[in-house]
Image (cartoon, rainbow, N blue to C red; front, side, top):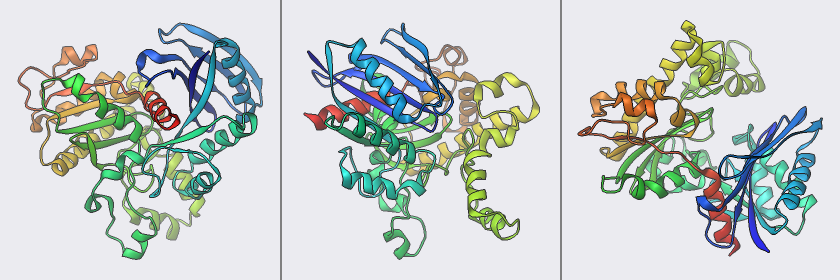
Length: 392
């Protein structure tokens, strides 16, 4: 019987998953299946594909199911479908690890207590990660679980880039820049040598562009600056999150518009970003197909902010050797890449329109002073590798 690792990314209404063979340090070829259970709390759809993309299951699980119900059904299916394999560990993507967790850890009661304290810093994510951890612990109490953090990769950021200009008592209390999407950046950093090969990659800016979006400056493949900070609200505008915002706006909303803290939180997490600006959708595909003036403006604002943050991160690095697009929008929206690269022409990004439309991987012309690349990310594989290392 072979060993296998289950990777989970639990959200409010979905659980995304992947299963990897674990006889040795996992690689892309060890992926056994990946999929999602979507619609938790309503009508749940369970779908999974094998490594080649062929469907293994696509069915309804029923209405009104909880995270625990869904995970029970998922684990039962894995046991039946992969009868010759044995789950030996579960790895969870956990968005916030705070100041304490600088790497992945095995989950115990003390870890859960620390993660619970961080819920206010990641209210859209942390509670659902904890719900999945609790469900697995109840269903399979002997199965080891590991937390892999989106913040851990950014603990190499120097203090000058990590701290706000706040009184030291507040910095000491943990109010600082943490950064997110670290598992994605860690994966990109791991494949830069084989992807860029002979090209320089000492100073690289990576744009992780999806419904959540951020950018990171890599110096010798380590994070030294990033656009998200204390929470996942900061930096670029996102699907429904505002990105950079004058703190005075929050004060104005509370003091002059009589909004409660919970009203402001709901506004900034759910009503802003591409959705708020366009008034149409938080989905870049919908906006690109819309043709509406407000959709066009939302896309242009998104590209403008990416180009501006590229300048900031290039300054943090003291120069730039390469620029990388990744994640859903970064990998699949050539129009967004075009707009960003054209705004970055001053930096020496010379877009190859044909290569960009084809998806790269190299999307700039020969001789471009700063080459731009499209590199698919693989956060699940990074989690599987962390779990394998800790479990062994």
